[in-house]
Image (cartoon, one colour):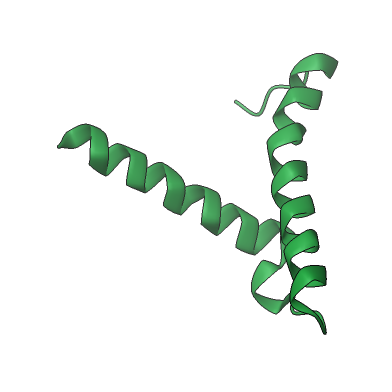
Length: 61
């Protein structure tokens, strides 16, 4: 049960970071597919950022 709560808390943190860092709530384009592409690009960027930071030797902690 604790593992499920931890996983949910982690997902909520990711959503909060995407909302604050990428302004996703205000992102609404004219077509569904354009919005889908923009959200996918934002998620990809969010996932690649730590890899680039690790490669460059930058630590957040």
